[in-house]
Every structure is written in structure tokens, then in C-alpha cells.
Image (cartoon, rainbow, N blue to C red):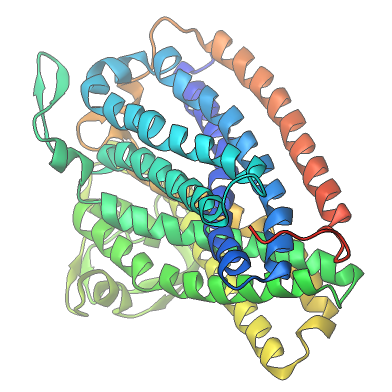
Length: 444
């Protein structure tokens, strides 16, 4: 069987982006949590917060480094595997990528150095400010990346001339219809991911020593921040984003829900086994999809059968990843509520089963982010630029399928090693734990 260069190029991009996307949500969420931690260490003269900041700053630096190393590879693929895409949208797509590098990455990386190595060497206020700028830089980086990706989902502010997309309105291109909903939903997901990361690490420390004051402080902060982010992830940001999809990408919404026939009082699918032609064993809530998508139970929701087959996304992948993401999000909120309940009862530190669950749950929000990304990207197919350029027309013509396959194998091996190294270094730092309370403590 002949190798398919388009399929292999998509697979390679999925592998490289998927591996890279492990790290930005942790970096963004953890950075904003450290802003709060370092503020308490500075303004409240709290030595435990200082120790907490020092400890998690090491984990932030490790995660940031991995994100940088894996992110560089991702952008090179636009010129190697997706040359036709780059030719078509280079005038538009290049601008947010350049802005991400110039305005976000350098801000984040510069102040990260000051944050990590400036403790005790610069003023307390400047040290906290450096932490704040790391968080702002990471958020701006995500903003510009989402600008580029959201334009692919809902392109605006352009015209097609001489076979190329040309920018005519920068503001419209930046703030395309899907940009703000996606940005808010993604930032909440990052904060939730960072909260579970901090909670899981704190739980690991508490399993060794339930009287660890630094770990207790970290877990309390993570529970509060996680509940805040988890609530917002469902409403309003998740609801807002779903309504945007319903209005601008109706076939994607239909694939999410396995809705084949358009109808009023459209049901919300709670569970089912999807195929590309029907939904088996579906459990549905009548009228709820119409209500959630358009605020009216009698609103009409388009079904997949209203679109020609070649314009439909994969129902199996879209439905499965979407419902898995929603299921994980529900699990996160339930876990956090249980943790808050145990905290209220004064039994949080003694609930070893829950603490073990938090440790095991560290990768789950990352998995949920990956599922959300797959949902969004597969749901856009067969378009690389929605209703403008098909994915099959965007691949490089000069790169053979065999060459792409070789690079997949090479990248796969490198990423396995990098992933193992990251986990090893992370576990080693957690086993070492925060510096002992008897150590010299500087409030900076």
C-alpha cells in the first residue's frame, strides 16, 4: 500500500504539537499561581510562601525549558511539510507567530532568568515583578498562538488575490469570531492544569509527611484556584465557546454531538458509540442542545446530513474526544469539591486515598487539554483554513511520504527520551522537596 504524504504530514504535526502542548498549560497555570505565592512571601513576609516559591520555581523552569525545546520544531514544519499552506496564508499567519516571538517569548524568557537567579540580588518588589512578567509573557505567547489558530477556524479580515490570502484588516484578523471564546477557555484550562499540578505535587509531599507546612499551603492554594478555574471552565467560558462553534462551525457541533438529522428541540448527547453514519446506544437529554447552543429549546440545530460527505469532520474522533474532555472536566470539579469538603471537615491531610488520587491526576488535565485540541482541529477538517483551503491542498509537494515517515520515527524516539528525562527530573525534584525550615530564609 502506498504511503499517504498528507496523512503522514498530519500525523507528524499532531505528534510534535501534541508533545509540545504538554508543557504550555502547566507553565501558564503554574506561573500565575506563583505570582500569588511570591506576593504573599513579599507583602506578608511569609517564609513558608518563600520556600513554596523557591520550590515550584524549579519545576516551572524545568517545564518552561521543555516547552521551548519542543516548540521550535513545531514552527519549522510550516515551511517543510506545509509549504503550500505557508504560501497561501504567509501574509496573515506569519504576523502572530512573529509577535509571539518578539513580544511574548523574549519577555517571558528574560524575566524568567531574573526570577530564578535574582532572588536576594534584586529588590523584593522587582523579584515579584519578574514573576508577574513571566506569567504575562506566557499568557501573551498563548494569545498570539491562538490568534493564528483561531484565524484558521474562523478566518476574517482578508481577501484572496492572485491565489493568496492577503491581510486587509489586522484587527478583524486578530479578533476573529472564535478568538476570544477560545482564549478564555484555554486560559482557564491552563489555570486548572497548573492547579492540579501544584495539588498533585503537594499531595506527594504530604503522603511522605502530612505535617509539611509548605505542602499544606500549596494544596490549599491549588484547591481554591482549581475550583475557581474549574467553575469558569464550564460556565461561562465553555458555554460561550460552544455557542460560538454552533454559530460559526455548525458541522463541527453536529460531529461533537453525533447529530445527523437537523432538528428543533435538538437533544444533548450524554453518551453513545459513534460511527461515521449513526450513533449507537445514545443517551440523550431532549431539547438541551438547542437550549445550550442558542438559548432556546425550539432553536434549530443543523445535522451532519445537511453537509456533503466530503465537507464533514470525522464523527468518531470528534465525538469521542469531545465527550472524553467533558467527562474529565466533570471529574476535576468533583475531585476539587471533595477536597474542599475534606478541608472544611479538617480531614484533608489524613485522606490518603484522596491525596493519592491527586498525585495520579497530575497528567489528567494535560490529557484534557490535548483532547480539547484534537476536538477543535479534527472538527475543522477537511479544511486547514475553514471553508477556504483544504488540508490536502496545503501539504508540501517536494517532501515525499517516505521522508515524512522517517522524520516521524526520529521525532518519536527523541520525544520518548525527552519525556522520560522530564519525568525523571520532575520526580527527583519532588523527592528532594522544599528546602528545610531551618535553612536561611529570605523574603524577596
